[in-house]
Image (cartoon, rainbow, N blue to C red; front, side, top):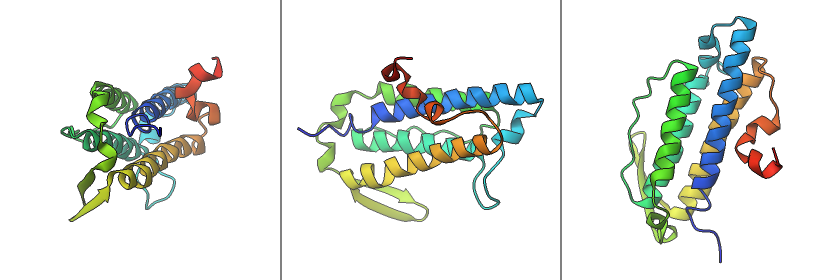
Length: 174
């Protein structure tokens, strides 16, 4: 039997969100130690035409809360995208984790047979649920999570792959 849509999404999303929260902790400590205004990190981007770190976190959390909600057939919570500090971004991550963990696993039963329609810009896009999860939600989430990591690493925050995978620490015997 293949894993359920829930098993293929929510646990991994929660683990990576915990990792993002942990790297934000490292960023805050780095800013304090180097006497850098933390807003420099929150507003930094890898290229002029890319979103800043704050928007990377907002998009990552929007993607997983929307993805899980649509697959489970529940309302997608709306967040106002007003975070400007590391603490506010961590609170958004915590709120997203709480939402994901609040969805009853049974709500995902039969999700693989559903169609998911969502608005992307001015267009409605409809996906088979498997395509939606595996080819849209998951890649987008990891793109924005990785970009967050890269922005912080580029700014000198001392971290490595083990920090990116910190949500899996219990499996590494740490």
